[in-house]
Length: 334
Ligand SMILES: Cc1cc2nc3c(=O)[nH]c(=O)nc-3n(C[C@H](O)[C@H](O)[C@H](O)COP(=O)(O)O)c2cc1C
Image (cartoon, rainbow, N blue to C red):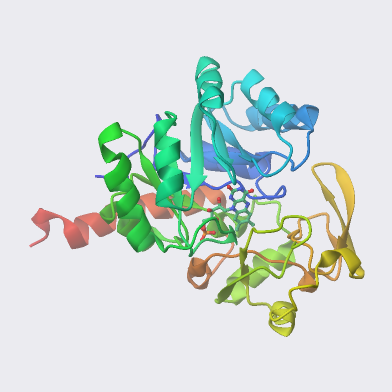
């Protein structure tokens, strides 16, 4: 029964790292305390002291395993060093190749390495360097989208590729309830990674207006309207809020650099201005025109009807999956 834990965790439920700082210590601890894997998100700039602070704060809230996500497209060397020094249980990587030396170094520190990939090629490279598990992100996913394929085709292909190597495969993209969980298991995954569902929890650091929109609205679009200058070549899946619908055909030469400032925010302790079309989702500190800011969401957003405690999300996923498997798919059913 695939709902059982992987990688020494109680359950196969992973909370994707939520940039820039939406998955803070409170959310991560709540997820790990409930038997899932909570993942902090390292800053997009070198800030090893802040990374240590995040890890230490999380440790005051949980004694269960948790990890940190690093986006390799941004400066990260010092942050990585802090993560390995602190010997967190997991290092999640995305948007860059995972070098073998890093995997070896992490293993020496007792840290398991779990990259997120968006294609078969990326999965093959990750498996080759000896990672501990692979998160496969489908086109359905909220946030920045790595690849072009949907989970129904990509996931079993990755499972076939790495299955013999004893590397658990974790499905990410559009999964918001127990039905998505069981479907992922049927496709060969051993676990699921949810992002949007965890943004809409009590413990997430997202702005209340963003959480509310995730409950109210149900449609998303794959776009590159946000953050073109700061992070080119990284398309996103966003919620179809009215602001986005007004600007979704933004001409290619436009980007956030010459746009008006629409708000202010503090991210990982740094004060920042938010310009129109910036890729920064609003967190609890954000002020200004919140409804004109990027709001990332996966295709499963229409299945999110309420803001829940993160532990309750995990309980419903696990118990729901167990029940569904028993009622619909077990041999004893009839
Ligand atoms: C607000 C938000 C921020 C995200 N930030 C990151 C990130 O920093 N690093 C990363 O690897 N994935 C990030 N993701 C993607 C998740 O890891 C995961 O692939 C995705 O959320 C799964 O799809 P779902 O949102 O439909 O559950 C983010 C997703 C969202 C919604």
